[in-house]
Length: 64
Image (cartoon, rainbow, N blue to C red; front, side, top):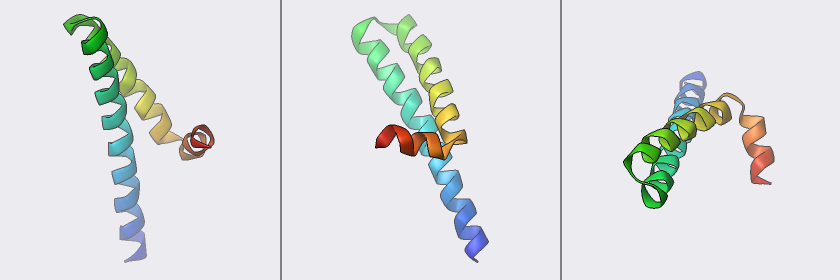
């Protein structure tokens, strides 16, 4: 049961990191430059979110 809970928490952390990075990048691009930059910055946010999701220690270092 504990292992299942840990897996669910890891999945939630990964999904929220990637979704948050993508959404913030797309929102910033849309507000500042338009559709093309929203797509481009959304992709950049996706990559940054995936990188932070793969290394939780780095995410904690950035938060403190």
